[in-house]
Length: 186
Ligand code: FES
Image (cartoon, rainbow, N blue to C red; front, side, top):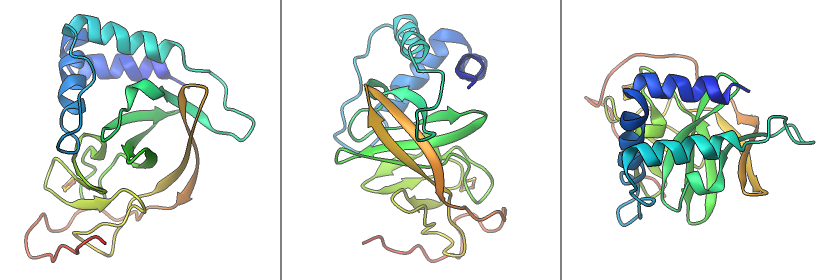
C-alpha cells in the first residue's frame, strides 16, 4: 500500500528524518488545546520510532476491506495527522476517544487538512483558514462544499480506514476567508 513510499515522500518534504520528526512533534502539539504531545524524544529518535511503527502495519486489507494506515499510538487523544490509503492522503482525528477520517485536501485549494488546527470537532485549514466539521466533512466557511468522509475502526493496535461514506465536493477555488459567513457548529 505504499507506506514506504509515503514515508519517503514525507522525509523529502520535511528535510529528512530530523525535519520529519520535528514536524511530527509540532503536529502532535498543535491539536486541541490541552492535548498532550507524544514523548518528545530527540528528532532522529522520533523519526526512527515513526518508521518502526509504520513498518509494522499489516500489508493486506482486512476481511472488510479496511486498510491499516497507522498504529494506534501514532494518533493520541485530541490529535490529528495525515496518513495514506494507497496513494490517497487522509486526515485522521481522535476526539473524545472516537476516530474520524476525512479528505486531506481542502475543498478550497487542496490545503493539507491533516495539518490544520483542531478546536473541538472543527479543523481549520492551515492555508486560508477554511473550517470543517470532522464528524461529517461539512465546510463551515462555504456551506456549498464538504470533504469526503471515510469509515474507520481500530483493532489490533492499528487504525484501519475503509470505504468512503460521503463523497466530497469536487469544485475548488473561490473566496478565502473574506465575505463568507462561517456557520457555527453544534
Ligand atoms: S486551501 Fe484550505 S483554506 Fe485555502
